[in-house]
Length: 258
Image 1 (cartoon, rainbow, N blue to C red):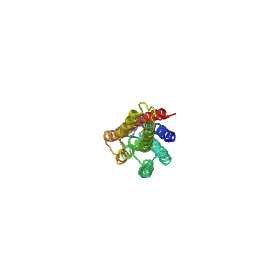
Image 2 (cartoon, rainbow, N blue to C red):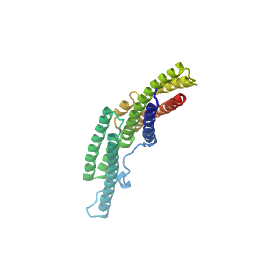
Image 3 (spheres, rainbow, N blue to C red):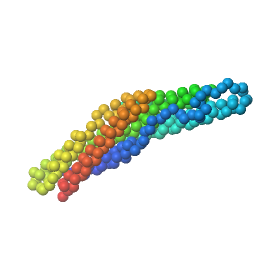
Image 4 (spheres, helix red, strand yellow):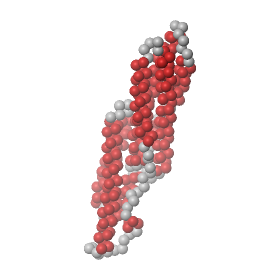
């Protein structure tokens, strides 16, 4: 019974799993407040004549606010474009999840591009401030979209690794049974097989990606953070169980070697 090719495939899948899920786990996702616009925006300026120093100062404040907000929008647009490339290159991402993520990214790219043009046309700092709030609360690119991409990819990679390890478990169980029937010393292979199965059964990724993809942006950053945190915890827990299962599979394979 040749089990090594199966274990080798499981190793490759798990290596990809660890790389992807480690990336998702490492990303800090701070809440994004409305743009920190210049201090003069805190209170309305008194009426001034065009060409006066006060009018020039007001114009400079508006220009600075627009530049800052535009730069923040550009950062989000760049992040969305990178995410689009990532999901198109994610080999284990399911078609349904890829389509769902692409829809989110396309909508946000269109919306933020339109918002960028709106900022450029604003005539008051107050309007720019409202645009900055919309940039954050209506899209949640960093707080929501980024973890949606990374954690959905990670969950699908882990699901693929789980399937590979279940296949490997079946083949290893057959090999252990055959070796035992032939009178070979199989040591604690049966115990390790049982532990391998228990670790695989402990992996719970059902609905994790779909639930995460259903989360909508909005003003309640804490609620969004709680939902992405739950998905991240599930992905991390699955990774721990899969690594333990892989170690068991390798141990059984080694026991069966001539």
